[in-house]
Image 1 (cartoon, one colour):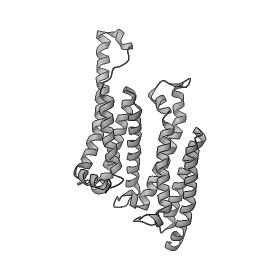
Image 2 (tube, one colour; image 1 turned 60 degrees about the vertical axis):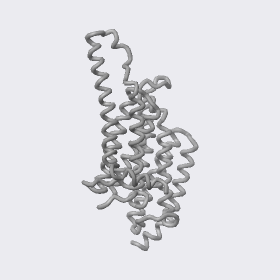
Image 3 (spheres, one colour; image 1 turned 90 degrees about the vertical axis):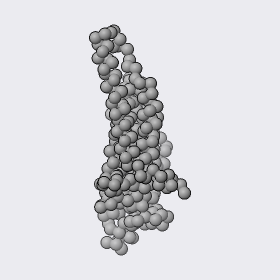
Length: 286
């Protein structure tokens, strides 16, 4: 039941669809940008007075890029339930294809925001960027195989680090993008993104807290294929908790929103439970 039957149906063409959609979104926005430059070049000679007028982009750009991005996002998220496997590279190459497709799609959508502003496209772009970074972390921390991160202690730790870094990133970039405001009003795409950064950080931080709680309560509540039996694994999990706590505390200090304070308390509690439940296994396992 659940999403597994759906993944079974799309499995034969999942990896190729990921690559195709990621490249498609990127080329779509690239082609629109090239078309706009060619139009302005022709106006330079035919009607220079019209150069002061704002560019008119393809009217369906927002809708087509949004639909393509949403389908790509679903495929990227399915990777974290059942890893994508490539017939010519195995699971590791599948994870790399998810990273490349998600990165291409997010870059294309971010680029499209400069042509036509859309909050929905911004949200999908951030989701794709987050998924691609988390997929890369699976490759970095994995050994010879990439298994489902929901069933692997080491890969959940990698996801925790990735989500903590991304949460802190959106807090940091807010300070950088503050200069894109003119008396509190945005005048660039980055300025418009400025007002969404707290939402991005909150959503990513919420997922990070869920991963932290799974790490802390995993031995009793869930079936995890790896149990940390060494001090190194326990230390890495504890550092992941600490990094996420610092990122959420920074967000709370910056935006003064109670949700970041509550998430910080949850991470702190999760870290305490993690130390209690994992220290014994680390000592006994050496």
